[in-house]
Image 1: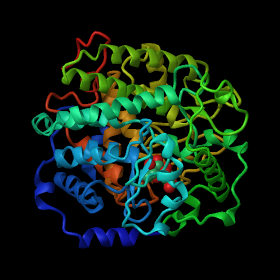
Image 2: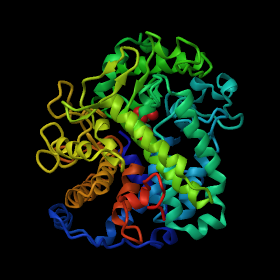
Image 3: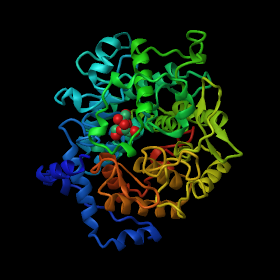
Image 4: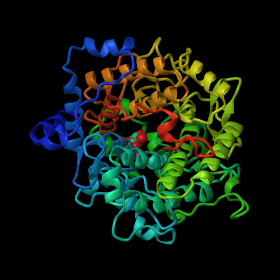
Amino acid sequence: MDRTTQLTARRTERPDPVLIASSPPATRRDEPGPAKAAVRETARPAGSLHLRAAEVLEGNWTGTSTVPSRGLYPHQWSWDSAFIAIGLRHLSPLRAQTELETLLGAQWGDGRVPHIVFNPSVPLDAYFPSPDFWRSSTAGRSAGAPRTVQTSGIVQPPVHALAAWLVHVADPGLSRARSFLPRIYPRLAAWHRYLLHRRDLGGGGLASVVHPWEQGMDNAPSWDAPLARVAPAPARSFRRADLDHGAAEDRPTDLDYGRYVRLAADYRDGGYADHPTGATGSGGRRADGFAVEDPAFNALLIASEHALARIARELGATGTARHARAERLTAALVDRLWDPAEGMFFCRDLRADGLIPERGVSGLVPLLLPALPRGTADTLVATLHGPHFGLAGATRLVPSYDLAGHAFDPHRYWRGPAWFNTNWLLERGLRVHGEHARAQGLRGALLETADTSGFAEYVDPYTGEACGALGFSWTAALTLDLLHEAPDGARGTTREIGEGTEGGDLR
Ligand code: 9WN
């Protein structure tokens, strides 16, 4: 484990006092809920959580972006950077803008935003798979991979337009002075175009993932059935660097890794080409390989499409078409992935052509969407608080997987532990649908657990015990975001992420 190393490293690096002092913690206007009281019971001074979160981000800042964790993840990750920017905007809007600009600077010509942007000064053996595995500039040439920066060839959930909008509203003056939105809007639009066209492998309007790493919840039980069809790469053909840092029982298994490697190598060897249904005739329906429509991935795309509409409006367009598209996508999401009998969304396995019957937190994330039918949102709130996820009952934070599921493990990565980014999304979702007291309870539990766990990467959902890396960037960033409130009190409401086809609600 590198926990000691990381903590020592953070203590010896001198945080930038200007950055840390630039934004004192805001006091929320909401009434204190029970969990908020629990935060107070820790008897820590109100400012210190903010300070410690800021120190984590300072320690993980490289000069142009933020690593998720110094030891385990020493490069820039795509959806991490979006969550990090959402928190960083409260400390330094300039750094938050830079974080997103660095990531989008590594975008491929076909529009994909790579899941990792490699730092050339980090040794190759510090992380696997390293740049010499992905070979982006050669294997990805026909897909338009950049020549000067090395990246992976797969993607991660599209949280970026949402992050860009939130970064803009944190300091509109700086944003306008730097032409932040005019510069990144075309890149964000190309990114969404890639997902909605090249990745519509099922032909139903939703984006598909072709690797579990793309969805971000690497070893979720939802992937077990589709992964079982993949022949694993031999264990001797690669060396896992993650086990130098993380406990083996908290990480994916060697068999999982063999399959991750096989899938990524096959995609690379095919030139990172995508085969949407209709483009090749047979592409979307191949019996082998991995192609899944995931509820969280698509919900984040929709939330980002709403945000892109707001960005378009800020830039002088109406945004109407984008809002309308977001609402059509919401309808497609319900149509293709909602299971009314189970009261939640499920992944669709395109190779087997059916829903995957595993309850994962991904199936709750669409609560984020403002245009979700009222009955669907109410049912999701009930599922969240029911026996499978236990919020405000058995668990402190929403687990990544069904508490009663056959594969539940409270410590193994995405097979049970609670993660801060998914819980932050659900806290927003509760607010979007007017569940303020419940959101407030979840917010309090998140702040307390971030504090007591040392900003852990993930935690035991029952006890809050830290797992994985400490000083994890998105945990610190989202803590900062929860400590702050938008100037108009609109954090997490429809006003902030935008909704409505007419745009009448947009400010
Ligand atoms: C593979 C960086 C990333 C997160 C993912 C998380 C984990 C990588 C890994 O770390 O994945 O991309 O090596 O395990 O699952 O969500 O973005 O923090």
